[in-house]
Amino acid sequence: MSAPTSMAEYFFDLLGYTLIEQALDPDHVRTINDWIDGLPPLEVDQWYGHIDVHTYSGVDGMNLQNIIEGGEIFERLIDHPAWIDQVRHYIGKAYGPYINESFINIRGPGGFIGVHSGGHVIDSCKPGGRDRKEWCCSELSLLVALTDVGPGDGPTVLIPSSHKSDIRHPHDKGGFSDAGPATRLEGAIEVHMKTGDALLFQDFLCHGSAERTNPGQRRMVVFRYLASVFAHRWGYVPSDGLLARLTPAQRKIVQPIVPRRPPTDGRIGRQQDEPDGLTQSDEEMANWAGQVPY
Image (cartoon, rainbow, N blue to C red; front, side, top):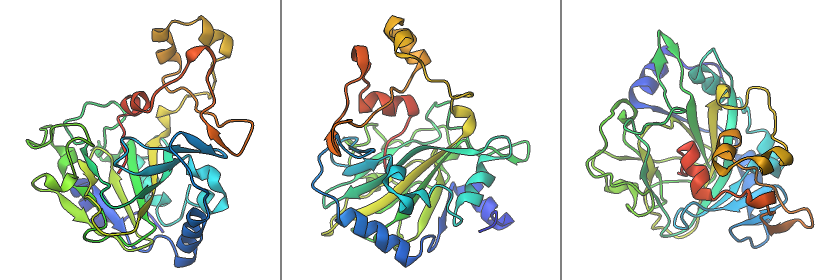
């Protein structure tokens, strides 16, 4: 797929999102769903190879984080032709994209994610839109439906154009799980998707998801692309010796996100302990990046 048309650019700038229909072919989707169906029973904080089993709040469902480690069927998604040209186009000419997060979200009946983000949020990695006639969206989110997501299926909910307002929605009380399903906010719309459709949006857009009231599972692949300027410039990794000598405040500056490593003694296991207590909670990781799931 080539870069977006001028009309598509206009509405992406205005509304903050675009729907790419049938981004994945049925065989690819079927292979991914078969892979999910073949998983052994997993619990949060376990590892399956290099895939971290994770949840943000419980009600949002189970996230299979670092899913690009799941094999070729996921590696293909890194720069899939259905969306990568648009990702590069909207991030802009100055920097290429890098993957800040990649996961599969599996959510059953009763699951949802409350509204979060919006133009009122102060976050240095989220400025988006245009600057001096050039695109500079530094944070884009991509959701690919692995199942049909219609009424009652827990569809993604967003408030169009909310990335352009620095006024917080009057009904947004914060706390993406405590606030309830995102559909409770006036002006929010549900984005219904067919299996294989992809939703690309500026992460500064106020968004969340409705509660799933139908039986079965809502399955989504989620990729978050950031401008590469937010990655380490040279890729240096601090040594264990340096980290051991630093104060906690210094560590947060040198290594704001502590690496999460799978166990080395088996395919499925718990989080490997970090040396010298250098652990970091999911809440701290989310706060650092200003990110929560969909």
